[in-house]
Length: 550
Image (cartoon, rainbow, N blue to C red; front, side):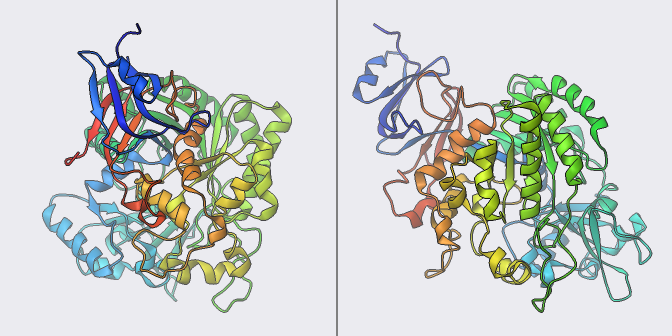
């Protein structure tokens, strides 16, 4: 007789994300590994010391994997002046004033998470902040971290005035006389952000652990940290990961994407190789390099193949910014690929997507096919000619599914400047799937919610959770079915993370990274997917989250 199991979960639908056996009702775990998947016969492994979890008709999934997330930054924001979860400018000012009053000894008021759609043109002013915090500098990155709202004291500290030139990779918003108005875009954020005091190592570790608890509460058992290194006002999270490992506190599996300094060139590659060796530690491995190739569409820094339109619908002289010169990008990616690095691209506009794919193609041509599993994140606009290139080049599409809905800011900040043709090419999930692309999924938290079911809801419905009844679907031809969306957030991300040999599906021999849900999302209507909640999360058979009402 086989040895008994340490843990058996039984009595509910098991969605294995294993195409050879997609459904079961029982799973047995021993020594952190799955030893049986099936039905009543699995119960034979229950012994006197086996913990039995009665699913009572609730469903079991493999743990989610977030392929693009910023946990330490998210955790820090939660403990600072947190502006997420509202688009009300008056509420922002109330929270900022309250935080400043509650923290009279804090030198800088910082935090962030505000939404562009809350302000005309997506550009709040220093004047509004000066009225409530005149005595200390204020620095508040927006939700997507491609811009920051600052007050006059912060501008003065940084020495920014009408004579200050825009950096090559950013823009200072100005009034008619050229004076900074309090909104900084892209590279201009660093002009002030570099002055903000770094959080202490203790604060950073606490932030990482706070974020880990949040991610586990949403069933996330592994992730790819999309920036490991110092970037703008974001502190390098690597020391926090090492501290968490040393103290036995890191329960997730993490792949670190080492930040590519776009102000430097190939001379940084030996440093990245050294960091990869330094940061190769059990549950944390920095085997990826993150290249941010462009900005975002809302501030017209996403790199487009043709110019943005002006407010009158005419062609402008601005096609966005390629942060790394495309010819040099090919050389860098080819060398990184030869060194065994995966490259994680931020590519939002159609030109950035093409430049990233061209770089992958150069690497494939020079080095042959290596198991580097390059992937492109965001993909707001993709030219139809480039869709089949993902499969042809073995490049995965890293989807931020929650963004693929018609949000209010699209009407003011995006669609008028993209035009109808480009506007109809946004977030082409369905086209990428039909072309045979490997799909992965990530939240980009704190840019957007870390809850996979919020994102999966949008992927399936192409409507935001909680949208008023009758809200039209956003490009419904690009919808994904529920099974495909779940697979992207589990097996697809595991593939990108080079973890698919041990996680990503409920399969005998794999790690028991499991999630118990409060329902079977396949059994209910699609419009209720976002209501799905995680009751319990396991990593290697160890419970790392239990909901209060589980």
